[in-house]
Image (spheres, rainbow, N blue to C red):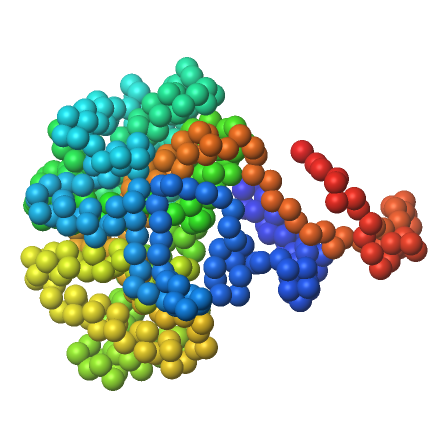
Length: 476
């Protein structure tokens, strides 16, 4: 019966797919004619201004003599340069997740007492409802941990008596709880998949209230619950660097859009997760790891720069790897000369590589980081510089930490949920209007005909040239 159903559905889809495509094609020249920016970005990749935020700032260019000139990328959290924040954690040899989360959500650096109170609240929230792991996470496990995570978030809404209350105090409570349990939901989701789908041993380690999120992630993930201080610190820095990146990224904009509709916190975060899981957004580090493995499999001498460079050229020309013509981990929608997150991260990556005796692997990454922009500039007409982004090294770090590829994007989510919650609060505090963009319709009215007379649709004589619809027409 199942096979017959699948065949019926496949045959129907195959039969009518072209009908769907033919009736949805839009002449690309119309985008320019009507001034519509595809992907809400202009020809130079600059995003359409759609809001105001005081949470973070991305700097990729500077004004010189009245013109915009690319510069080394800078990232600020609530006015503080990311280099200064990370160097502060490094100088004191402490973890930075909680302090950075406090900064992004409350808009100020915490005092010692405030930070300790915040850590205590996050620690106390590292609990799931009774039997939640058994009844929700272990049921229908999936290789796609992002889907598992989304399912868990939506189900948690059923346990909240004030799920639909969007008062600021309640949204703040919900946000802090979700930030706290995200690592549990993701790691437990992976263990359920690893056991039921891959027939591996199953174990659930509970997080400890006195540990940092990075320490608890490694503790929950590993069978022996052991990790080194360096491993936890590098993962902590990765979380800090992925925590927030302006309001213009896809998942944060999704957070703003769904928040503006008055939806509850669980639905908002589930929508953001659905955005982040897209390979064009949160899955880039996976492609980097896969690409680097492909290079190792096909380049005979990994220390020969000329051979590596030619293979990168082959990848760019769609002759190798996934044949999409992309050197993954290179370039960014905003940054051109450098991604500050990658620059901050690289030093810690090198320390971890030395600790893991993977210097040769690190040297290969460094070589590709240097050669790829050369190949791209030689082969492509580009409007700005190209440099390594944070995803170029993050997948390598996760691999060195023994984190399975299925958890790469969920770890991104464990960090970015802080930024999402900060933007949700900012939207609720400042904007009381649903986000409703406009689309230019190119539809032409047709004459309705009965089913026995249908062949080619007939256009209304007085509507053949222009679609006359009032600009004031509004739908819900």
